[in-house]
Structures are given as C-alpha cells and as structure tokens.
Amino acid sequence: MKGRLLILAGILFVWVNLPGWLHAQAVGEILGTVTDPSGALLPNAKVTAVLSSTGLTRTTVTGGSGAYTLAALPVGIYSLTVEATGFKSATSTGVTLDVSQQRELDFGLSLAGAEQQVEVTAVAPLVTTTHGALGGLVTGQQVQTLPLNGRAITNLVMLQPGLNFETDQTGWLAPEWAGNGNRGQTEVATLDNIDTTDAEMGNVQFWNFNLDAIAEFKVLQNNYSAEFGQGAGTITQIVTKTGTNQFHGSAFEFVRNSAFDARNFFSNGPGLAGQVPPFQRNEFGGTFGGPIKKDKTFFFVEYAGFRQRLGEPTNMAVPTADERQGVVSITGAGGQAETLQVPVNPIAQSILNKYPEPNNPSGPNGARTYTVQFKQPYTVDQFSVRGDHTFSSKDSVFVRASYINNQQSYTDPVAASENPLFSSTNFTQSAQLCGNGDSHFLAHPA
Image (cartoon, rainbow, N blue to C red; front, top):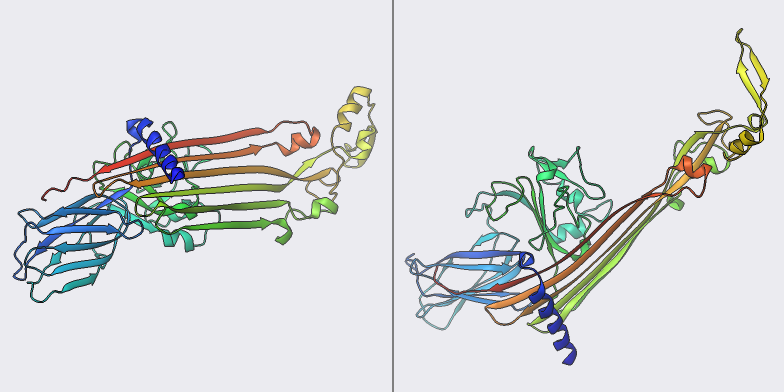
C-alpha cells in the first residue's frame, strides 16, 4: 500500500510541475442520439461509457435534442449503456475509439415491459459523417504483424496514399515524409498529442519508437481540424500503450549477421578481400505494464535497443612492394613498358610505409588494389515510462517520460586504413520528452 502511494505521489509531482504546453492526451469522442420507438428524440437519457481495459467510466445525459457527446475519451475499446425512465436499457459493446476520432453511435430504446436489456455489438461505420478530414489509421495489430525491415513506423506511414520520403531532407538521423505535394519540413508529429516535431528541421522525433509500445497511429493529410496547428503538411499522431487491469508485456530480439549472408559481388579478391563483409545487427527490447491499483492506477514501461556494425568493401590504390623501393613501371614514348628507378629518401620512405600493402591483385586497381571491409557503427537506445490514474468518473490524469538516443559514427575507411588513430565523426540525435494530460469531464446536455 505504501509503495502504491509513493508511485502515485511521484506521478502527481511530475504532473503538477510540468509546463502547461506539455499537457495533452491522445483522445477521441463518442457522440450520437437516443430515440424512442416512434423515432422521436429522447431527452434526459443517461449514457455511460466504460473503457474495457481499465474500467474508466464516463457518464452524460442527452439534451433536449436527444443528442449526447462524450468528449476527451482515451482511445480504446468501450461498452456504452443507455438508460431512461420508462424504457428498456440498451448496451453496445466493442466500440473502438481511435485517436482524434468522432465516433457516431445512435441508440433506439424500446418501451419498458418486463425487465429486459437490449445488447448490440458495435460495427465500425463505413463512412465518417462528422468531419471531412482525409487520413489513414494503422492499428496496433497492423503495427505488430506487418513485416518491417527495421522496427520503425516509417514504412507503415508510406502505406498511406500520396506519401513519400522527402528528397530534399534537411534533418539527419530522423526522417521527413511529404504528403500530397507538401514539403516534408511542414509536417507535424505528436506522441500522445504532445508535439515531437523538430522545431528547426521539421523532421519527426521518436520515429523509431518501440513498436511493441504503440497502440496505434494515424496519418492526417488534409482538410483536418483547426486544432492541428503549426504545420501545413502531414500530421502523424502516435498513441502509446497504457497499463491495464491485467499484467502484460513482451520481449523481442531480432538478429541479422554476416554469418548467414552470401558474399558481396564486389568482395571478389583472395583472403580478406573475398570474404563476406562483416555485418551484425541486433534489435532487442521489451515492454511491461499492469495495475498498481485495479481500476485506478496503472503503469507501462518499455525499452528498445539497436546495435549495428556494417562493413562495406572499399577499394583503394596503394603502392606495391616494388614502388616502395622506388621501382616504377611506366609506358615509354614508343608504347613500350619501361622501368625506372626513382630515388627514395627517408621521408618519402616513411610516407610510403604508412600505406597498407595491396591484398587484391585482381581488383579494379590491379596489383595496387587494397580492399578493406570497414565497419561503421550505429547505436540506438530508447525508453519510456508512463503512468495513468483515475480519480473519479470525471477526473483522470496520465504522465509519461520518454528518451531516445540515435548515434551514428562515420569514419573514412581510406584515412583509417592509413592511420588507425584517425578519429570518426559522430552524428547524434538525442531527444527527451516529458508530458502529461489531465481530463475533467463536464456532463452537460448536448
């Protein structure tokens, strides 16, 4: 009990001390009408929505027009119940609510006779009638099951019509994608409705967020609501998973290794020059979440790591053993091969000796060819911690802290072959994001 109170106190402390512009949450809304058997709109009907995973409950009543709105609901699967005096109650289960969705759900109540309850299973509407925004949703199941080369949402975003990679990309170690002719720099990305767009370059931060921790994401392309400001291009909304009333988690390890690969076409020399280029890639991580207090307080943590060491064959011309001694072959004036003896002083000799000896006489530079398979490292670490708490049917809060570190080093293989002490150039993208969202629900007639 004491441990639960300490965790809750920590969540509240972070929430209270975060700046106001970070207060956000990935939400949608359910709206509709309630009618009687004659089709007349029914006021003062009680509508209750319950989130299946956490037991979060929200209640409202229909207004004089018989309409209701349940706004600012966390994404997930809901069951809705409608009750009115003199009528049988009606329940709709399996109502899926996606991020920034306005889900329409109408109810028709029957007159009360014997005690009876009408239960229906919700079916997703084929056409959205509440707004004209054009976009595509990728569900958590699709994120988990579609094959990807690299655990990032980038390729899934490209499944949407009209989207492609920005060819004039201004950022580095983070992608930009352009939609319907808009430049990539005009895109906006959010994580749980918290802006994660690079303010300077316009590229997407957290583009390689742990796939096992993504509940869903949506790509809006045009005609979207004025609530999505800042950019005029594509809006990418990523929603993270939360803890539920059941403990759940995952662990993964994906391996690619040159031990399983065929030889590169250009690695065609003897010895090292003809070996398979070294390549080691490991993607690993896991997630874990569950209840701290059932129906009240939940946690969810995740980590993902990426390690890649990729070697590519590089051919360079180096002095032969004879040339190091000053013996040089040239083509004379008559087209005949001639051999010259060039004096080599100690300074020139020390420079020549710094070059590696040729190891691939059949390479593109003939007897002077030196082939090296130099490894370029790429390292990523990313983790996130999230907490959710429900105070009542009207008040709830969540807080999340996320960190990602992309580090890619580049070393000139030619320079490094001449001098092993040659330093590499490090490109690092490090992003931290802390945010929270609080919801206070006002039940008022629609």
